[in-house]
Length: 155
Length: 301
Image: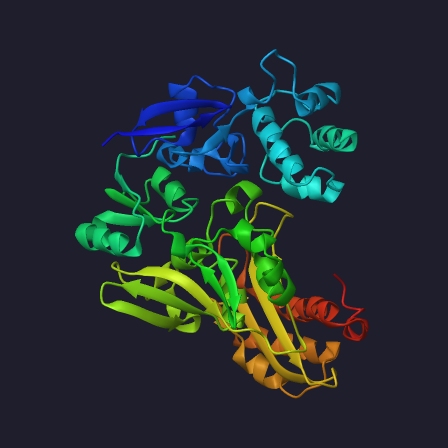
């Protein structure tokens, strides 16, 4: 039985009619066309689908869409300002070459944002622990860690 | 990757949840954090007709220290990881959650889910067993308290009936002069299941030199999480010294029944029980006092 839900998506109130079996990832990509959020493994191992739900990073492939009811959801599309100015993390990822194929990048950015929102000046060890749920098969992580470190040092 | 269709209920009271369980019986599955259930469903290992979500029942969440430590079954691993009460006085439980999955997983996965799944690799099981935790289980006929020692029947099997819900964990405080640690032995630093889990609690005499009581709980050393009672018995009244702990490790390795699985061999698990019991004791010592830590300083970490 489909159910109506309403929630805040990237700062705007939205509503949708969802099947209980729909994941939050499917809702974002297929109903709202927000295809920045990626499906990697579908099992919560790779972090490509990471979004922020009520200030907490979650794997949107393992959250039911119905569970987003009344929540505040932020996806990679909500990071830059309305006028297109990139978020400091996005800028730093570009400047440090922390992006290669780009598939993991949206999830990396969302985990990095959740990490810095909670702890603005993490140590390198804390950055690595905080990003442990996001796999990247291209960069070897060094540049990603450097980009996050650079943003934390600006703060 | 799609999920098969199901009906979804999100009761706001325990009574309502129990009524739904009674109504749908085997057709229903409880969802806590969903990080295991939804994976099982995506892999077609499970296909429930009905899913009952417990997250909107307020009394199932939260951490409270009131004589004993009470942890609601829907409390997330991340909440446990961040609890200063648990980090301070029940540090082995913090050890179990701070390297469990990723932050994304820990933000949703619950301690109740970890225990009710009863995976042999459940990280919270050895610490809870060593802490002598009890679980409160509520069913249609009322409430019962089950010692965690009696809770697991086999891999993925527990004493819970289909009509029951695990509501909270009741954990007695440790006596003064206690230290604890849990070591999750893995192949890599993150995002891995343990090859072996070793939880150690030591309680020292007031002189700080001999062992009054020790508790050793092991995960993946037998079909279900086990206490190494022969090793514990051996340690009683012995000096708190590294060579004594090494001997306890050998006794525990002898009484364990590890198996060879996809991840590693029984022989390797046995060897690692010997190595990790003194190592966990060294961490516990470090947490207790500098003098204790010196005794164990040689134990490599």
